[in-house]
Amino acid sequence: MLMVIAAFLCGLIFGVGLLISGMANPDKVLGFLNLSQPWDPSLAFVMLGAIAVGIVGFRLAKGRQMSFCGAPIRLPENNTVDRALLVGAILFGLGWGLAGICPGPALVLLGAGAGKGVLFVLSMLAGMWIVNKARPA
Image (cartoon, rainbow, N blue to C red; front, side):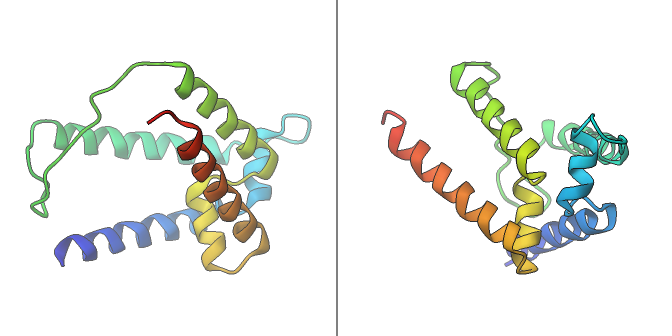
């Protein structure tokens, strides 16, 4: 039960952070990604803040076998840059650049009932389904 509460609180804090920073607004994100218009650097600051928090979190987790909630810590071991990773990164970047939405904000928009969020999440799920069907077992 503690894990569920911790996951809920982390998701809630993340969602509120997206709303406060404006990153759930696709137009704000596109203001950063579209260099043909006046540039909005706020996404860069949000990313730098996220990287700083992530560095601290990974440093704390690196030497531990169990999380503070008692769950085993399994950090990624594969650091290979392969074709699948590059294709996935390119597709992610294209989708993000076209829509101004990535998975976290999409879930916030879905929760708010925004049409863009619903369409994005449905498209994301369809893409995940296609990859799982196309990937060799």
